[in-house]
Length: 433
Image (cartoon, rainbow, N blue to C red):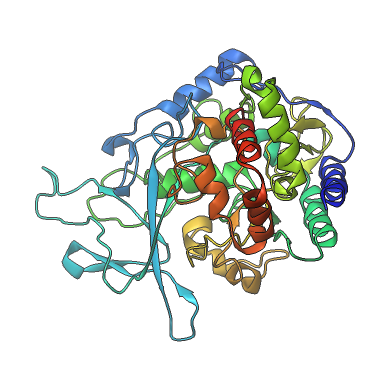
């Protein structure tokens, strides 16, 4: 069995990596990966760290005042302990339905999104009698939290060719006898209406483009409108001009700076000291042997420089082209027994006109099939996390491993059959990442 698993893992690694590239730079030094010079990168980081105010367009409903608030450990762009709330319910047909949340004493109902914002800008001095905070009605019986994600190194993830992820999913199915089959989901590219790409960002793989991802977060987490997402969730208490953010003298607006910052970040670096210990090395071998690397793929290689992605809106530069990264993720959707029943909301992630656009390769059926699936959590930087899995409900690495069911049940069972020292070796290997 061990030899067979090793062959399968090797096959998956070769399929994922394609032609070997040079190693992607790693580190937490706030320096550019080469996409831009360090001065430009640090200026983009300042935008990412900037605290928004009501005058800037913050709200009216929001979760955070800056990108850094949810992505800052150990530096800007990393993950954090922050979670967001998502809810919904099942309709008479058994399908997931987005919640309907009344605000302003029932005068308005927020719909079209599963996200529930924790904060609001009023009541305030200007609007002392306006109550708009969202509260979850009893009717919304599906409830979960989602932990914030690491964004460091995501420029390399964006540059991985769609075909690489498609081939990886196909190879998984083939080598596991269809017991493990990652789902490829084609998602809209907001900046390229009608175009789609293979999703890889967000717990439900709702975005393939870092520019789309940035615009989504700016609106839904901070309430700041932009050219990509020009419509407020609610206009109550709203006094800022729309869109809140516009291009500066350089022709770039905040979402452009956010996307460029993320594209220029280095990948999370492992703990090189711990990784070289005999115990961690043994754990690395066992990680492969029991099948963890089937989904937590060790290596991916980006497309060559000059390749156009995101509907032709972004050309992969030399700094991101033909680079090998080690995210320990296939960036595919899987049912590992922890699904919460929530389907991503089209209007929330792609705007109110999402259903009016004909998106290439878009399948509503495929979207609905993601109900209990989540993206494979990348393990680079996992040692820096205290709350694990998509909901943060697991707080030790052993807990997270043992929680895997569904497609991963056989891997979990193999882990349980290991000796205590072998299990501890795998945990130590993960603590080095």
